[in-house]
Length: 126
Image (cartoon, rainbow, N blue to C red; front, side, top):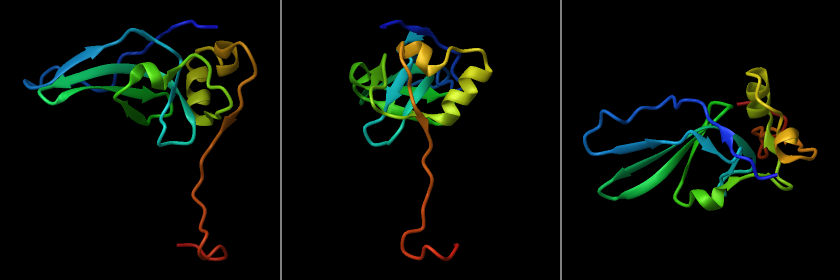
């Protein structure tokens, strides 16, 4: 299923900056994979920023985090594949009435979380 989803308004606004151009997107693929991360995230909003040094895209996730991409065509996904989708993204999106990840992908999609683990002193806390 390759269906674009309607995006929410961005929480960030760079329109007032004289040296930065912001272009907001109204539709995008539903998932984003940051190659430096572990989880795929649900896309809440997407905008492109451009200045004298180049252009890049900011992706705001339903969980409240955000990511940056210099190759948005590569990082946006219609199906997260074998990647886990962020559980917080899934919960926040579905609470707002958005379709589940499984509905968007047309198959079952697993969700997951990342937790810090003390590996040098596992019986102690910081």
